[in-house]
Image 1: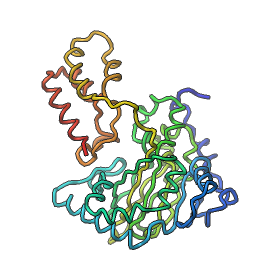
Image 2 (image 1 turned 180 degrees about the vertical axis):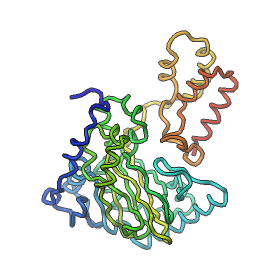
Image 3 (image 1 turned 135 degrees about the vertical axis):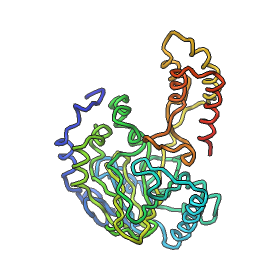
Length: 370
């Protein structure tokens, strides 16, 4: 098995062999339908070990996506929609435009950090919304116990353009060059750390631009590199599926699945979805470390250091952009904001004074706080 993946491993014929297959309904006895190669389940299934195993298999070895009909009751969705609409109105009054990892910043409406904003604004509506057996079922099936929920609201306004085809967090939020720095086994394991989901807050017929998917593409091992290549983008654009959704339906998918929001071709529908990202409990270190204090202390030494400052920075600074407060620390100009390690590297390269670095470090820390 290849220890490291590269562009040489990206062969379109290999992807086609995976995705040009039919999802076999006999392997998924709890599903009530298969639409465009996507498994469809009712939203009122009883949680059993057999069902959890089936859902996990669907996400890992099957089409990589499942849709639950009527996962959230319409009246519960409407209460949440009222809260989200109010949050968007607040943002607009404040002159805030939410950026997007994979679409033009400001073209649509996005509420970052919607989970805590929802809970603080209307705790009763929050409780009704997240007291959801389907969400608990699929999250536990994929991630096990102790999972962590986060949420972003995305409204694709009339005329809003499609996102580019992509994979999602973690490696999906990196350039091909960045992703290639991780060994092949990390490319295999990364999708098991998160689950992506979306709850439809309006009816989503095809003309509103519901999400485009390429079923079975999560199984393509060099996909985090290939998704950036034009021939793979062209294949996605020609071969994707686009399941329609009704208000209250929910889709959940393996983050390695090739996908992207579609173009809203209507003149009057604001296509609102609650984008859910559920993370494994294991995505955290054992010890809490004050890395900002470490960086500030080390900076004067590293200004004159003759060894590898990169190795010291890797041991001391936070080298990952997330989690952060995406209202203040947006991924504009790239897929992810600047990391603490990036900031320190830049400051050393430009020979900042320790006082200037300390000020920038504090500003960086402040932007990332809830």
